[in-house]
Length: 463
Image (cartoon, rainbow, N blue to C red; front, top):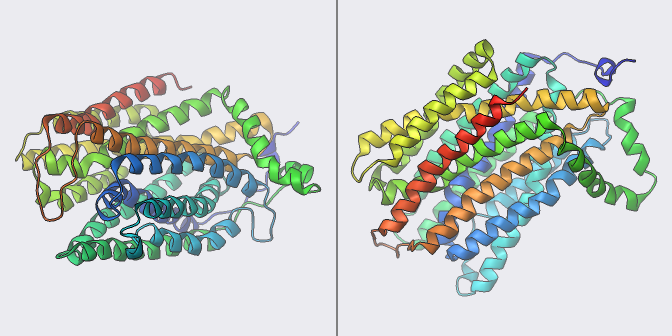
Protein backbone atom coordinates (compact mmCIF):
# COMPACT_ATOMS: atom_id res chain seq x y z
CA UNK A 1 0.00 0.00 0.00
CA UNK A 2 1.35 3.43 -0.88
CA UNK A 3 2.21 5.81 1.88
CA UNK A 4 0.68 9.21 2.29
CA UNK A 5 3.81 10.71 0.82
CA UNK A 6 3.50 8.59 -2.29
CA UNK A 7 0.02 9.98 -2.95
CA UNK A 8 0.77 13.61 -2.13
CA UNK A 9 0.52 15.92 -5.15
CA UNK A 10 3.68 17.84 -5.90
CA UNK A 11 4.28 21.15 -7.62
CA UNK A 12 7.36 22.95 -8.79
CA UNK A 13 8.65 25.77 -6.62
CA UNK A 14 10.95 28.24 -8.33
CA UNK A 15 14.08 29.64 -6.76
CA UNK A 16 12.40 33.05 -6.58
CA UNK A 17 9.46 31.60 -4.65
CA UNK A 18 11.85 30.05 -2.18
CA UNK A 19 13.55 33.41 -1.71
CA UNK A 20 10.23 35.22 -1.29
CA UNK A 21 9.06 32.63 1.22
CA UNK A 22 12.33 32.89 3.11
CA UNK A 23 11.91 36.67 3.29
CA UNK A 24 9.00 36.14 5.67
CA UNK A 25 11.48 35.32 8.38
CA UNK A 26 12.59 38.96 8.23
CA UNK A 27 9.27 39.88 9.86
CA UNK A 28 9.51 37.16 12.48
CA UNK A 29 13.10 37.92 13.46
CA UNK A 30 12.29 41.62 13.64
CA UNK A 31 9.81 40.81 16.41
CA UNK A 32 12.08 38.31 18.18
CA UNK A 33 15.21 40.48 18.01
CA UNK A 34 13.62 43.72 19.15
CA UNK A 35 11.83 41.99 22.01
CA UNK A 36 14.93 40.10 23.09
CA UNK A 37 17.17 43.17 23.24
CA UNK A 38 14.77 45.95 24.19
CA UNK A 39 11.54 44.81 25.84
CA UNK A 40 13.05 44.61 29.33
CA UNK A 41 14.83 48.03 29.17
CA UNK A 42 11.65 49.60 27.78
CA UNK A 43 9.36 48.19 30.45
CA UNK A 44 11.84 48.99 33.23
CA UNK A 45 12.99 52.46 32.20
CA UNK A 46 10.23 53.93 30.00
CA UNK A 47 7.09 52.21 31.29
CA UNK A 48 8.55 52.36 34.83
CA UNK A 49 7.38 48.87 35.78
CA UNK A 50 9.22 47.01 38.53
CA UNK A 51 11.51 44.03 37.68
CA UNK A 52 9.11 41.67 39.45
CA UNK A 53 6.13 42.72 37.35
CA UNK A 54 8.21 42.71 34.17
CA UNK A 55 9.23 39.11 34.80
CA UNK A 56 5.62 38.14 35.59
CA UNK A 57 4.36 39.82 32.43
CA UNK A 58 6.85 37.97 30.24
CA UNK A 59 6.07 34.61 31.85
CA UNK A 60 2.30 35.06 31.57
CA UNK A 61 2.66 36.05 27.93
CA UNK A 62 4.60 32.90 27.09
CA UNK A 63 2.27 30.57 28.99
CA UNK A 64 -0.63 32.24 27.19
CA UNK A 65 1.12 31.36 23.95
CA UNK A 66 0.94 27.78 25.15
CA UNK A 67 -2.78 27.98 24.42
CA UNK A 68 -2.80 30.03 21.23
CA UNK A 69 0.05 28.32 19.35
CA UNK A 70 -1.37 24.78 19.13
CA UNK A 71 -4.89 26.11 18.56
CA UNK A 72 -3.79 28.21 15.59
CA UNK A 73 -1.68 25.34 14.30
CA UNK A 74 -4.59 22.92 14.36
CA UNK A 75 -7.07 25.45 12.96
CA UNK A 76 -4.73 26.25 10.08
CA UNK A 77 -4.35 22.50 9.41
CA UNK A 78 -8.14 22.32 9.05
CA UNK A 79 -8.62 25.56 7.11
CA UNK A 80 -10.05 25.00 3.64
CA UNK A 81 -10.12 27.93 1.19
CA UNK A 82 -9.44 28.49 -2.49
CA UNK A 83 -6.21 30.30 -1.49
CA UNK A 84 -4.90 27.45 0.67
CA UNK A 85 -4.68 26.61 4.35
CA UNK A 86 -1.93 28.96 5.57
CA UNK A 87 -1.95 32.02 3.30
CA UNK A 88 -5.30 33.50 4.43
CA UNK A 89 -4.10 33.48 8.04
CA UNK A 90 -0.89 35.33 7.20
CA UNK A 91 -2.52 37.92 4.95
CA UNK A 92 -5.44 38.73 7.25
CA UNK A 93 -3.41 38.89 10.47
CA UNK A 94 -0.32 40.82 9.31
CA UNK A 95 -1.68 44.38 9.49
CA UNK A 96 -3.49 43.95 12.85
CA UNK A 97 -0.32 42.38 14.26
CA UNK A 98 1.76 45.39 13.17
CA UNK A 99 -0.69 47.88 14.71
CA UNK A 100 -0.73 46.00 18.01
CA UNK A 101 3.06 45.78 17.90
CA UNK A 102 3.22 49.58 17.89
CA UNK A 103 0.97 49.72 20.96
CA UNK A 104 3.42 47.54 22.90
CA UNK A 105 6.02 50.32 22.45
CA UNK A 106 3.73 53.20 23.41
CA UNK A 107 3.64 54.31 27.03
CA UNK A 108 0.38 56.29 27.39
CA UNK A 109 1.13 59.61 29.10
CA UNK A 110 -2.32 59.65 30.77
CA UNK A 111 -1.33 56.49 32.70
CA UNK A 112 1.90 57.98 34.04
CA UNK A 113 0.46 58.36 37.56
CA UNK A 114 -1.72 55.22 37.40
CA UNK A 115 0.64 52.35 38.13
CA UNK A 116 -1.95 49.55 38.27
CA UNK A 117 -3.62 50.70 35.05
CA UNK A 118 -0.23 51.06 33.37
CA UNK A 119 0.73 47.50 34.26
CA UNK A 120 -2.69 46.28 33.07
CA UNK A 121 -2.31 48.14 29.78
CA UNK A 122 1.00 46.48 28.97
CA UNK A 123 -0.30 43.07 29.99
CA UNK A 124 -3.22 43.42 27.58
CA UNK A 125 -1.14 44.95 24.79
CA UNK A 126 1.39 42.12 24.86
CA UNK A 127 -1.21 39.34 25.16
CA UNK A 128 -3.35 40.63 22.29
CA UNK A 129 -0.33 41.22 20.08
CA UNK A 130 0.93 37.73 20.87
CA UNK A 131 -2.40 36.23 19.80
CA UNK A 132 -2.46 37.98 16.42
CA UNK A 133 1.25 37.44 15.81
CA UNK A 134 0.75 33.71 16.38
CA UNK A 135 -1.81 33.74 13.55
CA UNK A 136 1.04 34.88 11.29
CA UNK A 137 4.03 32.94 12.63
CA UNK A 138 2.57 29.44 12.97
CA UNK A 139 0.99 29.28 9.47
CA UNK A 140 4.15 30.81 7.98
CA UNK A 141 6.45 28.10 9.30
CA UNK A 142 3.86 25.42 8.51
CA UNK A 143 4.28 26.24 4.80
CA UNK A 144 7.85 24.94 4.71
CA UNK A 145 7.18 21.19 4.23
CA UNK A 146 4.92 22.06 1.28
CA UNK A 147 7.68 23.88 -0.58
CA UNK A 148 10.60 21.46 -0.70
CA UNK A 149 10.57 17.67 -0.45
CA UNK A 150 14.26 16.77 -0.65
CA UNK A 151 16.65 16.72 2.33
CA UNK A 152 19.33 19.15 1.07
CA UNK A 153 16.73 21.40 -0.52
CA UNK A 154 15.17 22.01 2.86
CA UNK A 155 18.53 23.02 4.25
CA UNK A 156 18.77 25.65 1.50
CA UNK A 157 15.30 27.01 2.27
CA UNK A 158 16.12 27.16 5.98
CA UNK A 159 19.35 28.90 5.03
CA UNK A 160 17.36 31.54 3.13
CA UNK A 161 15.01 31.95 6.07
CA UNK A 162 17.88 32.46 8.46
CA UNK A 163 19.70 34.87 6.14
CA UNK A 164 16.62 37.09 6.07
CA UNK A 165 16.10 36.56 9.78
CA UNK A 166 19.65 37.51 10.63
CA UNK A 167 19.44 40.50 8.28
CA UNK A 168 16.47 41.66 10.34
CA UNK A 169 18.43 41.06 13.53
CA UNK A 170 21.37 43.10 12.24
CA UNK A 171 19.26 45.97 10.93
CA UNK A 172 16.83 46.35 13.81
CA UNK A 173 19.21 45.62 16.69
CA UNK A 174 21.24 48.58 15.38
CA UNK A 175 18.41 50.74 14.00
CA UNK A 176 16.36 50.47 17.19
CA UNK A 177 19.29 51.74 19.26
CA UNK A 178 20.09 54.49 16.75
CA UNK A 179 16.53 55.82 16.66
CA UNK A 180 16.18 55.78 20.43
CA UNK A 181 19.51 57.55 20.91
CA UNK A 182 18.81 60.12 18.17
CA UNK A 183 15.31 61.04 19.36
CA UNK A 184 15.80 60.60 23.09
CA UNK A 185 18.58 63.10 23.58
CA UNK A 186 17.10 65.41 26.20
CA UNK A 187 14.04 64.41 28.21
CA UNK A 188 12.24 61.25 29.30
CA UNK A 189 9.43 62.21 26.89
CA UNK A 190 11.92 62.18 24.00
CA UNK A 191 13.26 58.80 25.14
CA UNK A 192 9.72 57.38 25.13
CA UNK A 193 9.08 58.92 21.70
CA UNK A 194 12.22 57.26 20.38
CA UNK A 195 10.91 53.81 21.33
CA UNK A 196 7.56 54.59 19.69
CA UNK A 197 9.14 55.77 16.42
CA UNK A 198 11.39 52.69 16.38
CA UNK A 199 8.29 50.55 16.90
CA UNK A 200 6.59 52.12 13.89
CA UNK A 201 9.69 51.52 11.75
CA UNK A 202 9.81 47.84 12.67
CA UNK A 203 6.02 47.51 12.15
CA UNK A 204 6.44 48.50 8.49
CA UNK A 205 8.93 45.66 8.01
CA UNK A 206 6.61 43.21 9.77
CA UNK A 207 3.72 43.95 7.40
CA UNK A 208 5.74 44.09 4.19
CA UNK A 209 7.72 40.88 4.55
CA UNK A 210 4.80 38.89 5.99
CA UNK A 211 2.67 39.81 2.98
CA UNK A 212 5.42 39.06 0.46
CA UNK A 213 6.05 35.62 1.93
CA UNK A 214 2.39 34.65 1.59
CA UNK A 215 1.18 36.30 -1.60
CA UNK A 216 3.85 34.90 -3.93
CA UNK A 217 4.02 31.30 -2.68
CA UNK A 218 1.78 28.51 -3.92
CA UNK A 219 0.68 25.97 -1.35
CA UNK A 220 0.66 22.24 -2.02
CA UNK A 221 -2.91 21.17 -2.89
CA UNK A 222 -5.06 19.58 -0.18
CA UNK A 223 -5.73 15.87 -0.46
CA UNK A 224 -8.56 13.66 0.75
CA UNK A 225 -6.36 12.61 3.66
CA UNK A 226 -5.96 16.27 4.70
CA UNK A 227 -9.75 16.66 4.85
CA UNK A 228 -10.34 13.58 7.00
CA UNK A 229 -10.02 15.17 10.43
CA UNK A 230 -11.72 18.36 9.24
CA UNK A 231 -14.75 16.38 8.15
CA UNK A 232 -15.10 14.75 11.55
CA UNK A 233 -15.80 18.04 13.30
CA UNK A 234 -17.24 20.39 10.68
CA UNK A 235 -20.83 19.23 11.30
CA UNK A 236 -20.75 20.23 14.97
CA UNK A 237 -19.83 23.81 15.88
CA UNK A 238 -19.01 23.03 19.52
CA UNK A 239 -16.89 20.07 18.53
CA UNK A 240 -15.04 22.23 16.06
CA UNK A 241 -14.20 24.78 18.77
CA UNK A 242 -13.09 22.12 21.24
CA UNK A 243 -11.28 19.97 18.66
CA UNK A 244 -7.99 21.96 18.66
CA UNK A 245 -7.71 21.58 22.44
CA UNK A 246 -8.60 17.88 22.58
CA UNK A 247 -6.43 17.08 19.57
CA UNK A 248 -3.56 19.04 21.07
CA UNK A 249 -3.48 17.02 24.28
CA UNK A 250 -3.94 13.76 22.38
CA UNK A 251 -1.12 14.60 19.98
CA UNK A 252 1.19 15.75 22.77
CA UNK A 253 0.91 12.27 24.25
CA UNK A 254 1.88 10.79 20.90
CA UNK A 255 4.77 13.20 20.44
CA UNK A 256 6.24 12.38 23.84
CA UNK A 257 7.09 8.92 22.49
CA UNK A 258 8.17 10.23 19.06
CA UNK A 259 11.88 9.98 19.80
CA UNK A 260 13.25 11.85 16.79
CA UNK A 261 10.89 14.80 17.25
CA UNK A 262 11.56 15.13 20.96
CA UNK A 263 15.32 15.01 20.41
CA UNK A 264 15.15 17.79 17.81
CA UNK A 265 12.93 19.81 20.15
CA UNK A 266 15.41 19.33 23.01
CA UNK A 267 18.35 20.49 20.88
CA UNK A 268 16.30 23.44 19.68
CA UNK A 269 15.33 24.48 23.22
CA UNK A 270 18.88 24.23 24.54
CA UNK A 271 20.32 26.20 21.62
CA UNK A 272 17.79 28.98 22.03
CA UNK A 273 18.29 29.09 25.78
CA UNK A 274 21.97 29.60 25.03
CA UNK A 275 21.06 32.36 22.59
CA UNK A 276 18.53 34.19 24.75
CA UNK A 277 20.46 34.09 28.01
CA UNK A 278 23.26 35.91 26.21
CA UNK A 279 21.12 38.29 24.17
CA UNK A 280 18.85 39.36 27.01
CA UNK A 281 21.80 40.29 29.22
CA UNK A 282 24.30 41.50 26.62
CA UNK A 283 23.48 45.21 26.86
CA UNK A 284 23.75 45.15 30.66
CA UNK A 285 26.93 43.04 30.42
CA UNK A 286 28.53 45.65 28.15
CA UNK A 287 27.43 48.49 30.40
CA UNK A 288 28.19 47.15 33.87
CA UNK A 289 30.83 44.40 33.41
CA UNK A 290 32.93 45.60 30.44
CA UNK A 291 32.20 49.28 31.22
CA UNK A 292 31.88 49.95 27.47
CA UNK A 293 28.42 51.46 27.11
CA UNK A 294 29.61 53.88 24.42
CA UNK A 295 30.43 50.87 22.23
CA UNK A 296 27.08 49.10 22.77
CA UNK A 297 25.55 49.66 19.33
CA UNK A 298 28.75 48.61 17.54
CA UNK A 299 29.29 45.55 19.71
CA UNK A 300 25.70 44.47 19.05
CA UNK A 301 26.29 45.04 15.33
CA UNK A 302 29.42 42.86 15.49
CA UNK A 303 27.39 40.27 17.39
CA UNK A 304 24.78 40.05 14.61
CA UNK A 305 27.10 40.39 11.61
CA UNK A 306 29.26 37.49 12.76
CA UNK A 307 26.20 35.25 13.00
CA UNK A 308 25.03 36.29 9.53
CA UNK A 309 28.41 35.63 7.94
CA UNK A 310 28.68 32.27 9.69
CA UNK A 311 25.53 31.04 7.97
CA UNK A 312 27.18 30.86 4.57
CA UNK A 313 30.03 28.86 6.09
CA UNK A 314 27.93 26.46 8.18
CA UNK A 315 25.50 25.76 5.32
CA UNK A 316 28.37 24.64 3.09
CA UNK A 317 29.85 22.60 5.92
CA UNK A 318 26.49 20.95 6.67
CA UNK A 319 25.99 19.86 3.06
CA UNK A 320 29.44 18.24 3.07
CA UNK A 321 29.82 16.62 6.49
CA UNK A 322 26.22 16.43 7.75
CA UNK A 323 24.25 18.28 10.38
CA UNK A 324 25.55 16.42 13.42
CA UNK A 325 29.24 17.11 12.82
CA UNK A 326 28.40 20.67 11.84
CA UNK A 327 26.75 21.20 15.21
CA UNK A 328 29.79 19.81 17.08
CA UNK A 329 32.24 22.17 15.36
CA UNK A 330 29.93 25.18 15.68
CA UNK A 331 29.11 24.55 19.33
CA UNK A 332 32.81 24.24 20.15
CA UNK A 333 33.60 27.64 18.58
CA UNK A 334 30.50 29.11 20.22
CA UNK A 335 31.64 27.87 23.65
CA UNK A 336 35.18 29.21 23.20
CA UNK A 337 33.79 32.67 22.50
CA UNK A 338 31.56 32.51 25.59
CA UNK A 339 34.49 31.32 27.72
CA UNK A 340 36.55 34.32 26.60
CA UNK A 341 33.64 36.67 27.34
CA UNK A 342 33.34 35.32 30.88
CA UNK A 343 36.79 36.63 31.78
CA UNK A 344 36.43 40.08 30.19
CA UNK A 345 37.43 42.85 32.59
CA UNK A 346 36.42 46.50 32.71
CA UNK A 347 37.86 48.47 29.81
CA UNK A 348 38.89 45.46 27.69
CA UNK A 349 36.96 46.67 24.67
CA UNK A 350 39.15 45.12 21.96
CA UNK A 351 39.10 41.76 23.71
CA UNK A 352 35.30 41.98 24.02
CA UNK A 353 34.90 42.61 20.28
CA UNK A 354 37.07 39.55 19.56
CA UNK A 355 35.20 37.28 22.01
CA UNK A 356 31.79 38.41 20.72
CA UNK A 357 32.83 37.73 17.11
CA UNK A 358 34.08 34.21 17.96
CA UNK A 359 30.94 33.45 19.98
CA UNK A 360 28.59 34.65 17.26
CA UNK A 361 30.40 32.87 14.42
CA UNK A 362 29.87 29.58 16.20
CA UNK A 363 26.29 30.42 17.19
CA UNK A 364 25.14 30.19 13.58
CA UNK A 365 24.72 26.43 14.01
CA UNK A 366 22.19 27.02 16.78
CA UNK A 367 19.84 28.53 14.22
CA UNK A 368 20.65 26.42 11.16
CA UNK A 369 20.82 22.85 12.47
CA UNK A 370 17.60 22.50 14.53
CA UNK A 371 15.46 24.31 11.94
CA UNK A 372 16.80 22.18 9.09
CA UNK A 373 16.28 18.94 11.05
CA UNK A 374 12.60 19.61 11.80
CA UNK A 375 11.19 19.15 8.25
CA UNK A 376 12.91 15.76 8.08
CA UNK A 377 11.22 14.72 11.32
CA UNK A 378 7.85 15.99 10.07
CA UNK A 379 8.25 13.79 7.00
CA UNK A 380 8.93 10.78 9.23
CA UNK A 381 5.76 11.61 11.18
CA UNK A 382 3.72 11.72 7.96
CA UNK A 383 5.07 8.35 6.85
CA UNK A 384 4.27 6.75 10.22
CA UNK A 385 0.83 8.28 10.81
CA UNK A 386 -0.40 8.97 7.28
CA UNK A 387 -1.41 12.48 8.39
CA UNK A 388 -0.06 15.92 7.64
CA UNK A 389 0.35 17.54 11.06
CA UNK A 390 3.00 20.12 10.23
CA UNK A 391 0.83 22.94 11.58
CA UNK A 392 0.60 21.31 15.00
CA UNK A 393 4.25 20.19 15.04
CA UNK A 394 5.49 23.66 14.08
CA UNK A 395 3.13 25.25 16.62
CA UNK A 396 4.61 23.16 19.42
CA UNK A 397 8.11 23.90 18.11
CA UNK A 398 7.47 27.67 18.11
CA UNK A 399 5.75 27.40 21.49
CA UNK A 400 8.85 25.87 23.03
CA UNK A 401 11.00 28.61 21.48
CA UNK A 402 8.76 31.15 23.21
CA UNK A 403 9.17 29.32 26.52
CA UNK A 404 12.93 29.54 26.05
CA UNK A 405 12.56 33.26 25.40
CA UNK A 406 10.39 33.58 28.51
CA UNK A 407 13.03 31.90 30.64
CA UNK A 408 15.83 34.00 29.16
CA UNK A 409 13.96 37.27 29.64
CA UNK A 410 11.90 36.84 32.80
CA UNK A 411 14.14 34.65 34.94
CA UNK A 412 17.27 36.70 34.37
CA UNK A 413 15.36 39.95 34.92
CA UNK A 414 13.88 38.67 38.18
CA UNK A 415 17.16 37.27 39.54
CA UNK A 416 19.02 40.48 38.71
CA UNK A 417 16.49 42.28 40.88
CA UNK A 418 16.98 39.74 43.68
CA UNK A 419 20.78 40.13 43.73
CA UNK A 420 20.49 43.92 43.90
CA UNK A 421 20.30 45.36 40.39
CA UNK A 422 19.32 49.03 40.47
CA UNK A 423 17.93 50.89 37.50
CA UNK A 424 19.75 54.22 37.25
CA UNK A 425 17.72 57.36 37.74
CA UNK A 426 17.35 59.60 34.72
CA UNK A 427 20.61 61.32 33.85
CA UNK A 428 22.71 59.33 36.35
CA UNK A 429 25.34 56.59 36.10
CA UNK A 430 25.72 53.95 38.80
CA UNK A 431 28.07 51.04 39.42
CA UNK A 432 26.39 47.70 40.06
CA UNK A 433 27.48 45.45 42.91
CA UNK A 434 29.87 42.51 42.58
CA UNK A 435 26.92 40.11 42.90
CA UNK A 436 25.12 41.76 39.99
CA UNK A 437 28.24 41.68 37.82
CA UNK A 438 28.86 38.01 38.61
CA UNK A 439 25.23 37.17 37.80
CA UNK A 440 25.58 38.92 34.45
CA UNK A 441 28.72 36.88 33.69
CA UNK A 442 26.92 33.64 34.56
CA UNK A 443 23.81 34.42 32.52
CA UNK A 444 25.67 35.82 29.53
CA UNK A 445 28.50 33.29 29.31
CA UNK A 446 28.53 30.23 31.61
CA UNK A 447 24.91 29.05 31.47
CA UNK A 448 24.89 29.05 27.64
CA UNK A 449 27.98 26.79 27.62
CA UNK A 450 26.18 24.30 29.86
CA UNK A 451 23.16 24.29 27.53
CA UNK A 452 25.38 23.65 24.49
CA UNK A 453 27.15 20.70 26.13
CA UNK A 454 23.84 19.03 26.97
CA UNK A 455 22.60 19.64 23.42
CA UNK A 456 25.77 18.05 22.02
CA UNK A 457 25.06 14.88 24.00
CA UNK A 458 21.55 14.70 22.55
CA UNK A 459 22.84 15.26 19.01
CA UNK A 460 25.32 12.42 19.54
CA UNK A 461 22.46 9.95 20.14
CA UNK A 462 20.24 11.34 17.36
CA UNK A 463 19.56 8.64 14.72
